[in-house]
Length: 358
Ligand code: SF4
Image 1 (tube, rainbow, N blue to C red):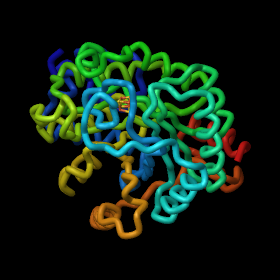
Image 2: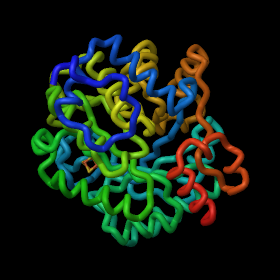
Image 3: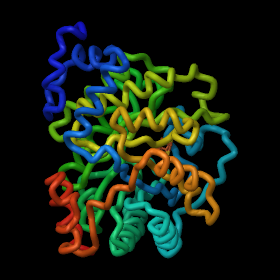
Image 4: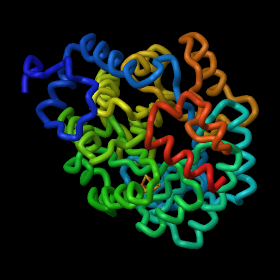
């Protein structure tokens, strides 16, 4: 489809029937037009001067049996990463308190599992209860989940589950061989059916082409319900992983992908995640302009004098950006008073339900 055939005025409508031709045509728009429309649509659904801030803590590190070619946590690659067993609940909660004190409103707990064992899941559920009691939104990423495990996490008060598609189905097979693209979709179904918000996106700069990026976005945008969070990661090349040395992505193609994600899923939070620390301030500002409205603070944030968190705070100040209030409060009445209560019905509904567990 040529860009001339796109109906630019209808951008901003929430749709689930995008075609590959439309997505490719959006990616091919002149850069200024694309960013203009993304910003226009962004303002329809969000305050453009607010960014949601999440903190990620690795609660179990390394020794993962999967073979994701980008990941230093895979047991198959020698990256010098130190393995760590599942953390104690108290230690996780201490980190969550520190993150909250530094402005994070969502706390994401990541464990390098193919899929968690039931015993491990119970410990994570306890962590989730503790973090929710602090009035923070909770997110977890633990690998594949069965429908029953997803229900258990929901019962513990989990707000979001992160499980990325990584790339197009075709390119995915070149990156991971130990589980299928369909396995990923099945886990996402379990999460959605359990009533947990979905956090799902991909990684750019792994050697994929523009069609792969278009297909990744198409799969996300044509889900029956858009993921509430869409992380757009830029590959961090780690020595020892098979993807070390791939041709880096043109930064403008990264911004284009962010902008098209904003246009295809206008009500979702589009998150800058991995690779952000390698972007300069101008690049990050361009991503915010293109509709990104969520960031991850890495776990290094949790150390007392963290230059990265200082840099983020300085950037927010220079750009006049404020952290977005959490969509979940420990107290239901308090939640009702937040502006977020009118913004997204599904998030609000989950928030209120989860607050009842807190
Ligand atoms: S499943 Fe997760 S932790 Fe394991 S290798 Fe893949 S990305 Fe890394």
